Length: 226
Image 1 (cartoon, rainbow, N blue to C red):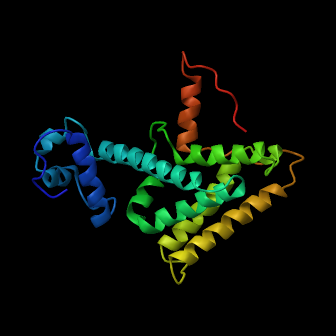
Image 2: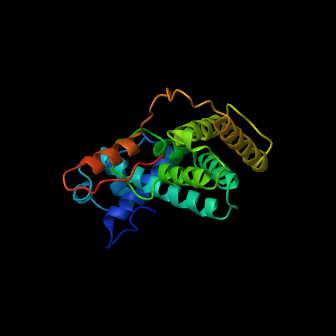
Image 3: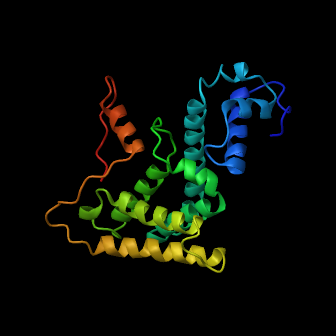
């Protein structure tokens, strides 16, 4: 959105759009709330009606990007056949997004303490792993925490490629590598020895937000997720 194009309507959305553009151009730290305000053609005081600081604008943008990523992942997963191909599609889509949008991916992948947004990339992956268990493709005993194992693998690959530490001849090769990494993790989980249940319990800002919501006064009891 070019400077001066905002005249009326949803200023909050216009500021988020401007912040996203600025991240692509300058990175996450190279601009201010005042600069975002100027870009949409309003005074900083007008922006403060919606965001009391640059940090609050960044937090809102973080949530928006997570929802957008989850919607993209859901679309791509939904096009894949049942079983492991759906989780492989998740890995391929996640890596492709990080390579195509490295600046916004860096923000969305950060550890900001956001509200429990929905949809969320974590929930998309967790649901697909639950489907693998239901379809007999993954032992129920290895399901707890498996989404963190898959996420670590695909996010690690995504960062290595996006940062130029791992290079391929083209986008198709990146896709194939994402497929290989995701399949290797799924195969490893299927063969995992699960007798003692001693693996550590991983958490993320999102799962912690969900846990707080489940234990809040007046909340309905949640069924345990495997």
